[in-house]
Image (tube, rainbow, N blue to C red; front, side, top):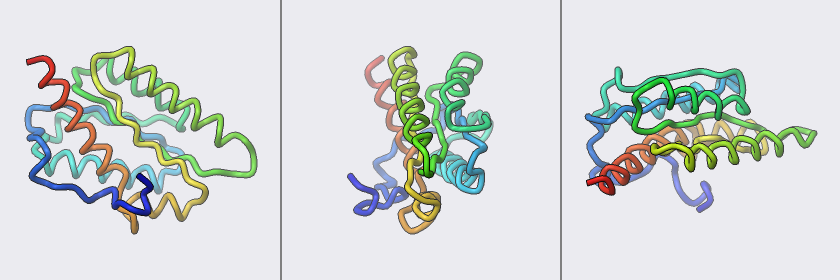
Length: 164
C-alpha cells in the first residue's frame, strides 16, 4: 500500500508480540545521515517500547546503501541475532545510479533472507527527492524505522511459532 494512504508509525500496539527476549541487529547507511539517523532512532525507540533491552540491539554503520547487505551479513554472522534490520536512504538524482543502488540492495536483502534462518528487514527509503525522505523519517508519513522494527518483531515471532 502506498505510504500516502498509511502512516508508517501507526499500528495496533496491543497486536505486537513482547520483544523482551529478542535480539536484533540494525545496519544503517551513513549516506543521507540526516535521514538515516532518524530511521535508526525510530527503530530503536520502537523496539524498546515493545520490551527489547537496549543491550539486545546491535547497531552497525556502513558508508552507503550498497554496503548495507555486507553489513547485514556481517552482523548476522558475528552476533547472536533473531533478525537484522537494514536502514538506508536513496534519493533519485539525474543519473541511473539510483536504479542500480536500489536494485542491488533489494536483490541483496532477498538473497540474505533465503540464505539465513533469520529475517532481514527491508528499511531502505527509495525516494524521488529529499522532502519525500523527510516525510518518511519522522515527518508527515511517520517513520520507516518504526515500521521496520515492528516488522522485525512480528517476523521473529512468526519464526518462533514455526519452530515450536
